[in-house]
Amino acid sequence: MPFELQPLPYAEDALEPYIDAQTMRIHHDFHHGGYVNNLNKALESYPDLQNRSIDDLIRNLHTLPEGVRTAVRNQGGGHFNHSIFWSIVAPNAGGEPTGAIATVINDVFGNFENFKTQFNDAGAKHFGSGFVWLVRTANNKFEIISQPNQDCPWSDGHYPILCNDVWEHAYYLTYQNRRPEYLKQWWNTVSWDAVNQRYATATR
Ligand SMILES: [Fe+2]
Image (cartoon, rainbow, N blue to C red; front, side):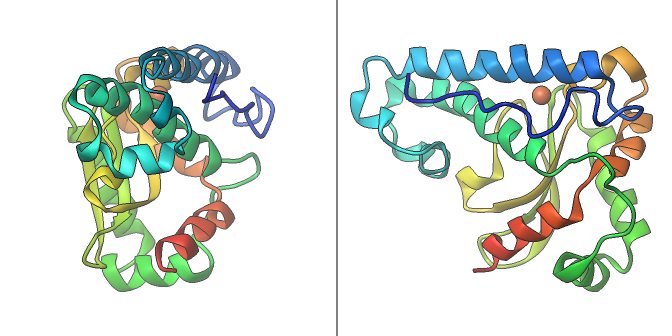
C-alpha cells in the first residue's frame, strides 16, 4: 500500500479536556484511516501515481487523470489535511503565538485576539463540512480562508500554515451543535512551535 496512516504523535487522551479521547480515536483511526484506505484503493490502477508524495498529488491535482482526480481530491485531501491537522496540535500547548508567526499575526491581523476572532468566524460560518485555514497565498499574502469537504488550498498554490477541522466528526461527542465553542477551545491545543515550522517552510 503506497500510503500509510501514521500513528498520532501523542496519546489519544493527550488533548483532553479540549478534545476527548474517543473523538481522537474515531477521528484518527477511522476517519483519517478511511481516507488512506480509500486513496490506496483509488490508486490501484494508477501505479505511476502511487510513487508520488501526497503533497505532490494535492498540489498538482488539476494535472491528474480525470478518472482519479475526484478520488484524490476527496480521499487524498482527507489524508493530507488530517496529517497537517494532527501535526499542529499538541499536549501542553496553546497560549499566545511565539516566534515568526506571532509577528505575522500582529502585522497582518492587528493582534492575536483579532486573528482568532476572524479565524473562528470563518469556521463558525462555514456551511457544512470543511476546514478553515491560515495560508500563505501564491502571491505571498497571509489570509484566512475556509474550504468545503477535504479541499485543500495547496491545490491552488496557497501554502497551508494552520488549519482547523470543522467537520462534525471533529467535535460532536463533546460539543454537539456548539461549533463556536469547539473553535474557541481548540486554540488551547495549538502548538506554536509546530506552526512556526510550517511557517518556515511556507516562506522558504
Ligand atoms: Fe476530520
